[in-house]
Amino acid sequence: MTTTSPRGGARPTATPPSVFVLLAAGAGLSAASLYYNQPILRTITQDFGATPAATGWLPTLTQAGYASGILLFAPLGDRLDLRRVILVKGAALSAALLVAALAPSLGALALASLAIGLLATTAQDFVPAAAALAPEGARGKTVGIAMTGLLLGILLSRVVSGAVGEHLGWRAVYVGSSALVAGLVAVVALRLPPMTPNASASYGALLRSTLTLVRRHAPLRRAALAQGLLAVAFSGFWSTLAIVLSREPFEMGSTVAGAFGLAGAAGALAAPVAGSVADKRGPSAVLRIGALLVFGSFLAMAVAPRSLAVLLAGTVVFDLGVQASLIAHQSIVYGLDGGARSRLNAILVSTMFAGMAVGSAVASRVVERWGLVGVGALGATAAAGAWIVRAWPAR
Image 1 (cartoon, rainbow, N blue to C red):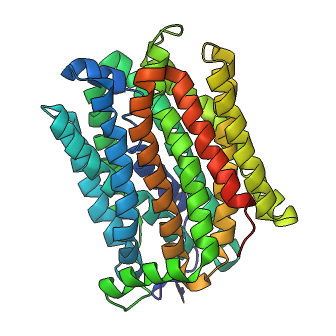
Image 2 (image 1 turned 120 degrees about the vertical axis):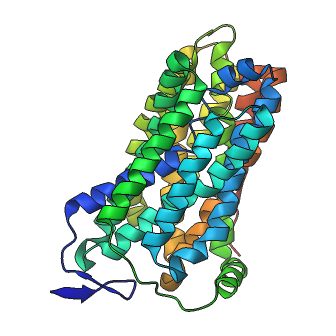
């Protein structure tokens, strides 16, 4: 027996649970590709004889590529077979990671990093695929499974990258990730069913409609701006953490820098509680509290830059604030237009990653002159801006 899928095609009545696990793993492995370079920046700097400011462009380009790719590729998921989109982009992502592993110069690695960012947007294809295959009464739960995989991929990528980079070298990180993504593509080809597209408009028309959504919805613009500012703080910290920890008074290696991802996971995994709070008290309260948590964490780092305890506690708290704010912003954005949720999400996520790119670029210069004090001041300033955006009376 078959039934019509949300994307317009026919699919089996019940999708095996293993397929949803596969989609969660796919989202996590794809998103992880964005963050492998952060804990190993120090070893890359040493290998190429470059400056921290020069290697700081690697996470900047990766995140800028992701922000651009979200907008450029978002219409494809509405217009083409999503299974084919995942297979093509996944294979290209595996190739880009292998090119990064073989990069003969920092410039070549920078170009590969940009390509990795563009193609890591495959992570955002696995989530709507989960929604398309989910039973009607369990779509929210199913999408939550995919998002959990994506979140764990982001958080644990730093742990794995830091450990592998310290013991086997930074190139091994890219070789291993390329092999994992290639294996993922092979399994997807075997297990994921075709999904008929649900939009017949041209690619150009769908892309133009994204701009129309920005003009039409003021809450969308406000959410994107506030989350983008929080992303400046988030990325400024994570893109420079390995450099901060390598210096006095900490003098620690990339394994420790990667292990800080576990501290971030403690905060981020507690953040879904914000969803129920937003349902009961409204997202605005969650957003203001989240911005204050981020502000307080970075202010504490700037005031006590030599304290490892403050650094650890701040990592937990600011990750909680950023993730709670993202969940609250998504609850606002998804309620604006049920027929355009993928494009609305693309606007929010692309703006967020544009903020990450800015945060990486600025922090890589600030850390050279002022160390953790400068990074803390940058994060606190960005969080204060986000709080003002949310607290300012809506027009």
